[in-house]
Length: 211
Image (cartoon, rainbow, N blue to C red; front, side, top):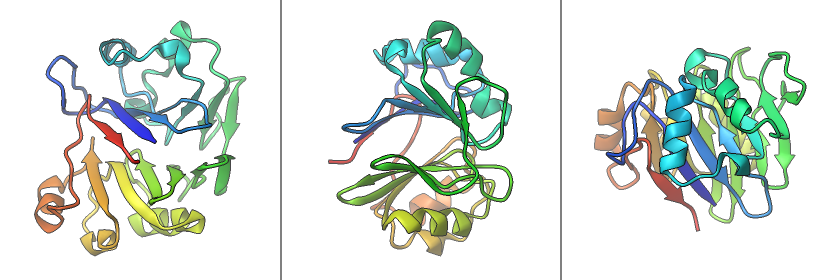
């Protein structure tokens, strides 16, 4: 599987634009291309997508972690460019014809699942690989232990990627093999110091492949 970070507070590639928010493209064999979140600004989102040589028309589904502007702000511009997106997975209704509201842990494809809306605000997604689950989080507004425990219903967690807000119970990550904190994560320095062999930098343009 392959994850390409297209929107983040920082850039991994200098030709891309950083902005407060998060989005990444999730590509898994035998599954639709899914854009996880859409950042806060549609123009920046589409510009970065173009520079990353991603065809916006190839995006088949969108997964929205939660309805804060820095995760949903680029959606309207994306839909103007690609109005044929088949499904938009959301934790709460936003009134779109093609939306799928997910309240409970649910498989949305054979090897892709949603944790469902946790603590009334946010859902995460996971891809089930041979190495374990690659878990993608938007901001981790719910308690991290709850996110991890819910994801573990689908298997062992191999990697976690995304925004982790003020998460500081670092021991929860001791059995995770890859940690890529992005966006709103407040304790990147501490995570890097505690887990130097597992930690990788995020930023727009970072590509993570799990083989």
